[in-house]
Image (cartoon, rainbow, N blue to C red; front, side, top):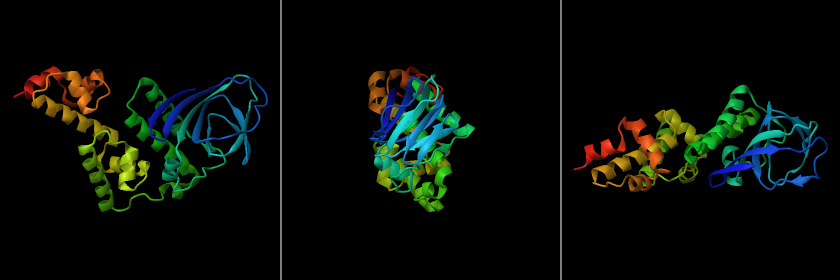
Amino acid sequence: MRAWVLADGLTLADVACRHGRGRGAETEVADQYAFVFVRRGCFVRNSSAGEHLLDPTLAYCMTEGDEQRYDHPQAHGDDCTAVFLSPELVASVWGGMLELPANPLPVDSTLDVRHRQLLAAARRGTEDDTLTETALALISDALEGANSAQVASGRPNGAKQRAALVDGVRERLSVNPDATVIELAAALSVSPHHLSRTFRAVTGETIARHRMRVRMRLALESFAGGERDLARIAADAGFADHGHFCRVLRSETDATPSELRSALAA
């Protein structure tokens, strides 16, 4: 299993099972919460909800404490995309409840492509901020098929409330661009997914994108202040590395760091 810790309480994993055909090991107890999309193959999950054959058209949830056993009707193994969540995040995306759906959930073509894109983005090294928003949106949208009203619980209503949330995000990121969407949501008393969705609906961009633009402006201010060391500017502004800084700056301004350094220096 290859895993990426996206944020506190949120982990993405590429799970490959190569178990031979036959009954699985003895019943095990799930020690964490998870949402699992099947990418390839099939297997049978036995739990308190019964016996369910899972293939790439279905996803399933694990609730901490679930008793489960996995059997394998075929000898070709299987691959899954799993998102592991803390109890706090489960409650935030599931209307305050801590018991995730026990029965498998249908995965339409759109959701299937999205979880594959999420995994591909993680493999490419996409920033954790972007992956976090993407993963939370994926889970919330998948859960809406089970109970849309429960997922929508706590969603901000009214233009003024939505505008206040957007302003709250902007205010906090102007002071601390490193604040994650989970930290922002906690400070603003709303779920991370609802905050992300509201911000995108009002501004037309993701929180991760806005954060990157704030970091770029910090870098431009360093240029104007006479800083010459590009690596230091990148680190101080919160970019992953010098290369990432250069790519973002070029895409946002259509200029190289050296050109901007010369243009903005006093």
